[in-house]
Length: 166
Image (cartoon, rainbow, N blue to C red; front, side, top):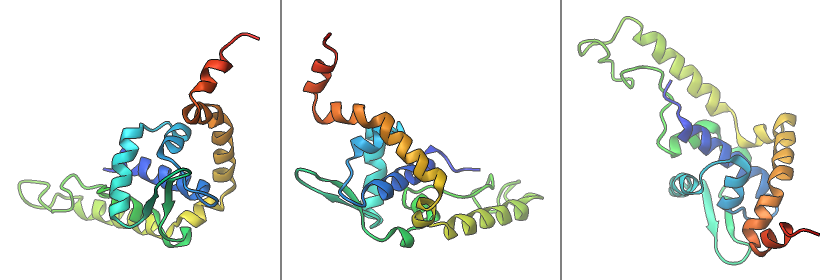
């Protein structure tokens, strides 16, 4: 399977954005903190997601990112494609040249699996994921755990006062 961290991180970041941007734009720093993804890696992913028309940046105070479309209009397969990730379990990249420039014995099996995976991910929208109890519970837990770190990022002076003895 060729689904790497790039695709998984993109889906995770988009789900985080979908959950948190309902009220206001979300900064990449906040997503990075909650999801423990490198900020510079997120910046690369969001540049691709922006080019694909899935997210837009909001400048100025209170700025960050928002989704360009409704969560019911964005599916997981589309997110993975937007970051140039492949959903291809063949070793030949679907070219059919796996064995001495010809298809291998199991080529059709792996192509069929790839199609099934794509169809499955193509049917799942961000809206459907947001409706799952496990997703909401996890997002709330992440919020609680990351809130202090996010506040320190926004107000570095807090780090000094919070470390002082009483």
